[in-house]
Image 1 (cartoon, rainbow, N blue to C red):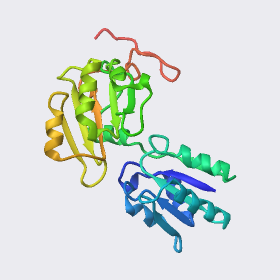
Image 2: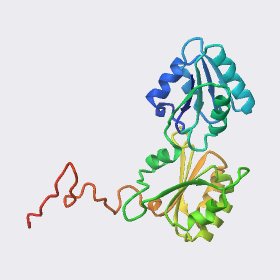
Image 3: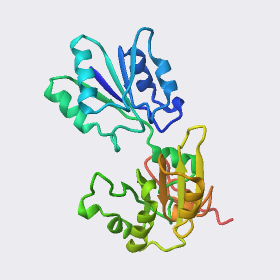
Image 4: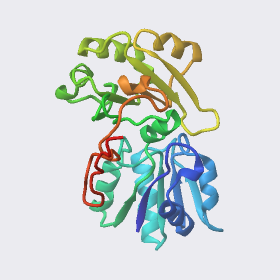
Length: 258
C-alpha cells in the first residue's frame, strides 16, 4: 500500500491523526522537503528510510515507490497542504495504477483554511459572501479559457489565489478588469502556520507596494473580497442560531413581547 498524505500548511502538529499513524507505519517516507516541515519525519519508526523529493522528477519518485512496494515495504508519500488541491497527485496515481499498485489518499488541512483561521475570518460570512473560489493565476501550467481570472472576478465573491504571488501585478490587473474596485480588501498570508508567518492587509490599490516591501515572492496566499475587510467579529448573522429560525433539533422561540 502507498499512502498519499496531506501534511497540512506548515505547522507539524496540523497533520491528521491518520496521516501521522501512516508515517509511523511506513518503511519508506518520501516527502516534499521544499514545502513540508522536516519535523514531520520525526514520526517515522526506527529504521525507516526518509527521502526528500524536491530535487526529483516524476520518474524518480515513482521508481522509488515501485521498488519499495515490490520489496514488500509500506510507503508514505507526504505532500504539503491537501493532496487534492494543486498536489500533482493525479499523475502519480495514474502511474501506480498502471503498475498495479494500490494506494490511498489521506486529506490534509488546506492552506486557505489555515489562512482563514489565522485571520479569524469566516470566508462565507452572511451579508458579505456565500461562495469561495479557489484558483491561481496562469503560469507555466495554463488555465482553461473559462477559468481566466478576469472571468472568475466577475462573480465579485471571495477569491483565494494559490501559487500566484509572483504574478501579483498581473493578478491585480485581472481583478480590476473583472470588476473589483481599488478599495476591495486584499490579504496576503505568507508561510501560514510556520514560525515566520507574515500577514499583510491592504486593498487592490495598496497591497502590491506592501508585498514588494516585504520581499514576498513565494509560499503566499492572496485572499480577495469583502470578507477580508471584516476583521474579527463584525456585522452579519446566519439563520442557524437565530431564535426565530427553527430546524429539526430546535423549534423557533416565540417572542415574549418584552
